[in-house]
Image (cartoon, rainbow, N blue to C red; front, side, top):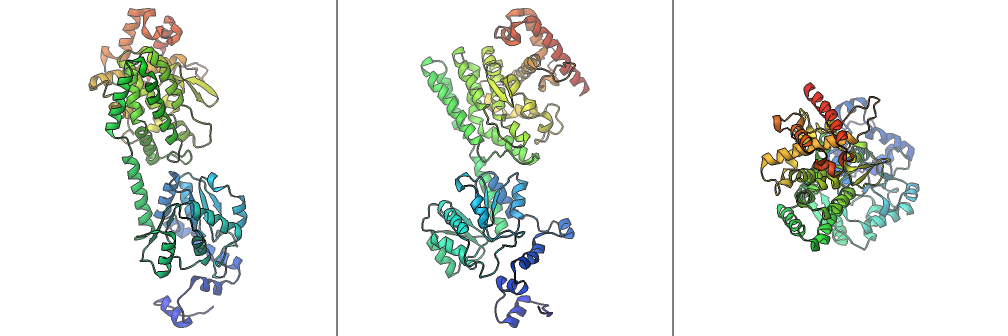
Length: 533
């Protein structure tokens, strides 16, 4: 060690003193001869002090956060890094991800096969908390055989995006790239400077595309933003929606088209469920205003075609179509039992919930009471250990609670935020069958009132006083006067009695007195809440 004055340019001082450019490996070898000494020396460079923590130093960078976002959406599954720190792991945890980390030969042996690894980080130089980290030139000449074999598989079976490595150092890593003769997928190599001759040789060997970048933060943030933009533009084109609606209108009148009608709905439902079960919709991590709004919007975009088709079908369907509608609701509600954050697990049912809303409004608008039964009572929805009719199993409070919906943009001060959020969202799905806004609003309010009424009748209260409860909609505050859904339905019941259409379809067990009792109780429930608002 030397107590030298290196004020000014330390690099110039080093070159003058030692006759060579400063070399990380050689400097580290001079400062600490043994691996455990090097580990203790480097630890202070990775862990923030109290002051640094207050200043936000040694935290994940914008590049780390962008990479983590790409991992969450399954665009990146394997990361090979020469870094010892844990900044990337911290960024991934913030996205709700728990990667498998491999940093030693022993860890390689215990790692899952690549095909089964959801997210794998390979720290080829080790982890800074492990004394076996690889630093010096001699340590970087070769890797243990298990690590070398793992790299061979990664470089053979995956495309590569290389950032932050010049290929000048780490001969073992360069050798792994040179050994791989199969270029199954493209390699993109980024750098802030043009490649030197040595790197050009490696680029030719990999048939890689070189991309000049300003820095890792800029590159990965830009990449993440562009992919988000592509996802947004992947929404179905309006012509696709109109073509699908035109097809279902052509299939509905004639029984000879029933198979095509069934296939159109089933295939679109399968597409949605396949995509909803993929990496875009992770079930871990904490919900916040940003990711909740993003997830809700993604589900809405994903169901745009099916919502319009389903609404059109429910408006015009005959009794022979009802079994198909029932199966569709069941299929859209069939989610495997798995772990995750309860909020995200419940939100998986949002696409099916959207269908019930769009189809229900359409059915109510055209007095298709058999369709309501086919959507509400006939489908069996599995929630936990219970099998429930869809009118209970897809209740909004078990899909997206009003309290949670208040974090959606513009819903902070709304009394019925789910209903008020859905009204403009579903408008385009009903445009074909309800072109007038006034009719749409009236159908929406009647539908929501009926859902609350039927739910209140079937609901088994967990409280000892057996209080009535049903989901609420905009009907609780929208002033229809004598044309309020509660008033209209009350007059219908008094006029038609046991012939009221929903009774004839099996709602309220076909019991007029049970219907009247449920209506009185439900009206007292929501009117009491309305007074408090």
